[in-house]
Length: 461
Image (cartoon, rainbow, N blue to C red):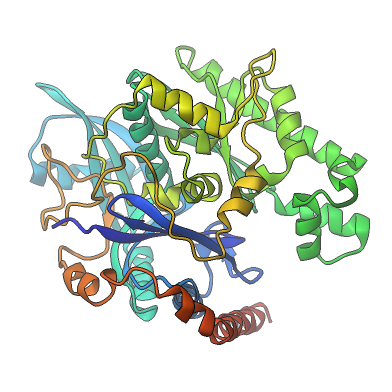
């Protein structure tokens, strides 16, 4: 059975991002700031408190659907492409752990292994294999249960992005040998994810992330770092042009250029022709401008690959494409866009090209403002998106009609039918009701933040 309603959850260092998907379309996208130090490197530090925070966030935004898929950071899993001779499922289950023995120093029995078939020939097969610790899987399962949610899956964030690229290739009839470079402009670090022929290859991490910019502004202005973030995003008093920030932006742009050059040197036949970016620091227009001037390829926001003009969808793609991507079913096929539809989308994105081919792209802050991820919205994507996201087959490993959900939490027990009956049919709470309860919702959210902050302070002491 395939669920038609699901929520993709991405828990980051600075924000949690949530995409509510109905029949493959983004029904609602929102985000909430998490307390300082609650999450480090994408990994949750205080699970019990985060469960309460997640529960209250769902309530405050009127999300009644309980079926959730979590996006797990690439730092939390081992993932690699492997090529093996054809073998039975049982043989593959026995052999997969050996493919990670050079990467996992701990007991391999403590890890769960899964795979997705990329190619299959007469004698060999190419797989995207993943190893995730059973302890981490159990923590996410407990997190969901504590938040009164139904955990359907746990998917690496880079696989979520891979599914988006696959969908884009189908929409725009892109050749299968197309390579991609995707820049995640995160809070604690920047990451460049490389995709070879649309399949995840490797990630290059660059530290520190956007938080370092806010810290510098805090030192310059003598304000709190949270106020400094807002000042940078809104470019208060033209702060982005401050000498110290320009130096940081230029240094980061050079590091990104070196990472791209190194990958090209190591993969001379790659077809990367654009750097696509997403994440909070993409709001820093001066940084994007310097990055465009430094690189010899165009720099564009990832929302250009969304294939829609819907603002909720584009805001999701700009801040957290993985929260949408993890909900996609890789086996579903989408209809290619016509030339007229492609031209209309280009016009709606408002992308302009400069002489060297670099485009400033869409004003990301405007996208988020128009979508207003913090307010209820019932806009839907205007284009064809797969109607379902997951095949809840009890058999996890299949060589033919395979399931690319790499790590599952339900152990083959399909309980989403009841969850959808209880919550899914209602979708959002009524708009008037939401307004009537807004004060109660704010208080519950603030209470969750206070509890989480208190637990963090106890942990630090």
